[in-house]
Amino acid sequence: KNQVEQSPQSLIILEGKNCTLQCNYTVSPFSNLRWYKQDTGRGPVSLTIMTFSENTKSNGRYTATLDADTKQSSLHITASQLSDSASYICVVPYNNNDMRFGAGTRLTVKP
Amino acid sequence: NAGVTQTPKFRVLKTGQSMTLLCAQDMNHEYMYWYRQDPGMGLRLIHYSVGEGTTAKGEVPDGYNVSRLKKQNFLLGLESAAPSQTSVYFCASSFGTASSYEQYFGPGTRLTVT
Image 1 (cartoon, rainbow over the protein chains, first blue to last red):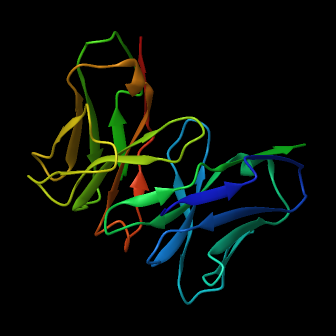
Image 2: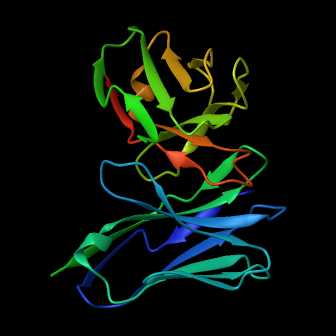
Image 3: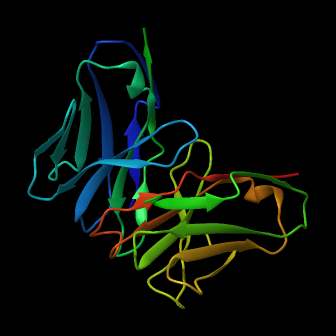
């Protein structure tokens, strides 16, 4: 039904720990998948864009993986910092100008 | 270079009132979008524009109108606000089609309709 589902809905971790966020999508045909970070009260900011042929892509302490066969992606955050507290949103294009956004995972990093 | 800006940041309306949200971008982008974000849901596309003078409907266009008189500006209008339009509204822009180019988002407008 051309949807994007994310899990967990929320996550609390201690500073310095790692975490992994999940994204499952049913959007077809597939062209690319994006991960955005949205700080409270701000607009989403792009972290990474993955195409069909990319399995892994890193952006600093953020590493995204993509399995186009199972239609799953994950975002791994290494050595979390307080500034990582935000919502992380998975997005897949539905057509040229319509994107399907997941509801996001709200991450809280505690000292 | 301010990127994408939105005016106002917050607004409270009474049912039936009208208002216009302004989005401006200084990146010379052709494509501009209006989304709404509701609790527990992903952003949903209201209307978009592929260039000056053009607009098109998105997933949830009812109750909204838009205009793109200048390339850098994209206006979202609510003619008769309803409580169901209480939401956070985000504007975005991109150099080309959203599916192929990165979208840049504004800071959002929080609208409450009582």
